[in-house]
Image (cartoon, rainbow, N blue to C red; front, top):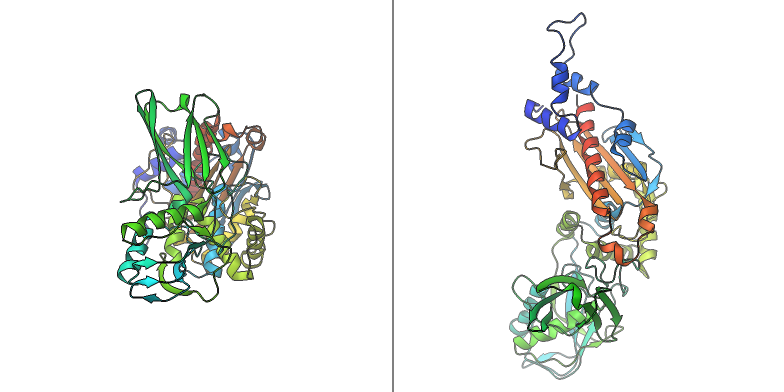
Length: 502
């Protein structure tokens, strides 16, 4: 059913395109009658749309830009600008990772975290070792650990373990972080293993107390906040650098500059030893259920003869992917990508090797020609994708993998970033942002039922490459670049909504 395009919606579309009421003012100067047949309202709006190249040039966005839009049904390319220019996709890469996981693992796949033992439960006692075995679940949190330890007591009947407490995270390769070029302290670049917790972040909180500070490091969730020793913080009398990190062997060792703290505050810090972090929280919460475990020991392999006592299942993969695309969680992308590679080829030896496997899959299944991702999240800025390749992949995935319903709604906005309510054009897309890099890719539904696929990538790589590690968390000019890139994306969306409808 064709939706009526209201005057309010058209005004909003023009505002997003940078035209606003001026277009209507200009049309009001025309005579009441014409020597030629009058155009319909929609056709009149189309005449006010500048060429795509002009729109891009007037944005003043520095660096390189790659854009393409095509009809989903026919595959016909409607418009492009440097479509073969390969640029960093940032988090738009997660849309490809979602397709990879859907195709290889299936939408109903569940990650499993298992509790195993080397001896049976006899009268509540295990005369052997207890094993916490991760299955690569990127969504496991403290509340889930609390539920597992409660079930261990109430369902499995365990009250005592005489042997060791072993921890296995070998379902996925152990990684110190996703991208080695990121600042040490950013929570979106944590370590990864087959056993993860709270997106592998620890909550650091401080509050001034006299001449010093009270400091806590905890594994907080919606209902719990157990303090941990797997990550430790020391305040030092300095102003810079704000944070330092060193590997403490059995724990993460952090320092923070006292001059940067103020009266109080909090932030999430990345965990580099996720299996140890999860094991400590498990031990704490098991004790609260009356089960005393020995100091956790990391195990390179599951002990022979061990049997499963209970299993915790994650949500279905389609739910995990929907949340990943909504909140752009890097660890989720890496875990599902590594898991898909392991399922497809039997091994996932490293993040780069897994990304290469996904690149090959994308060429085979989605028809991409030159995709070159170095990870599954888009965090690494050496990844490259062209707008043409991305549009081709989106169209193929739309038809065979059902990616579109998982993408977040992306409302059209005015120049001052206000959402245009009841706009007749709807967009579902994945955004991507790095310092001086911006991407957007997804689908546009027009009022007449036409469906478009589009991709837009922009990057000022020389400016990005010039940043120091410390500057990368909040670089000078970074926010301004992101704002202008998003404005250009909105103008292009508004243009396509007017130009290709009807």
